[in-house]
Length: 380
Image (cartoon, rainbow, N blue to C red; front, side, top):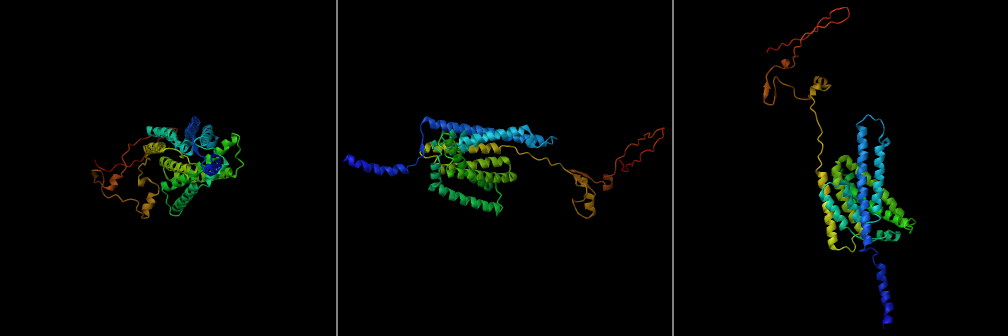
């Protein structure tokens, strides 16, 4: 009886095995090493990118404040910043191949770390981040791409993106939240495709070639396209709003949308218990608060606006002659604060008395006539 029932049991268990999700959480030490490597690469990359951008900004400011006729791309400082920028981007790109997407995306807060809240939030993100690892093969990425949770997520995201784009282009809704939500929606797709491309490259380097799958090139094209449009909207936002507002709002929106996309596409939180998910969410909130406080406490420069008299501007007399009233005419008396002067207007503008000075001009001792000076007619 047992021997006869064994084939039936095998046939009944076969569909369950094939339908099982291949994303399994790893509890061994190797998976934590991968998380640590990915987190360190992300932190290193974002710090180097921050240094690189400051170097390039310093190069532009230095050229603007000097008489150097060279272009910015002919300076060593700018090229050093570009080298560090590429190095940092390579570090962030490589981190996606080791750690889950939901862990890598929030670590961009290290580029603006300056207070304890952001540090505590980063620590919680690394400690309680998702620990699911999956080989980025062409079959796995294709299976995730056609799964119903991601298709439903893509439908909702496309509808929201079209509505935001309509209000932004047709209704002139130039709000910072609208523009940066467009950036965040595009950035979530950029993060998903970057992880797929980076993971397939790493798997190919390890010996299992993945570059012959069409899904690799589809992801590569989507990565480049979304990155370009994301940079376009971000440049438009930088022309309308302050950089500190853009940094904090963009980080919060982009991180939230990217974590949602990663959890839907790669199933980052599969097998995680409620405590780890809650602690990870708490780390995100603390990091958000830290970044907000850092950018909020920045002092905005107050532009200096000197007072310019309307009478001292060129062309004011011609405007008065044509009957154009630029400012109210002065009456017989004027006041400044609590002081009043009832003198007549001609006496106000009467020139002061200058001493008569005679000088000798010319060779041969010929004396020149003295200067003609108007005398003050106002009595003391």
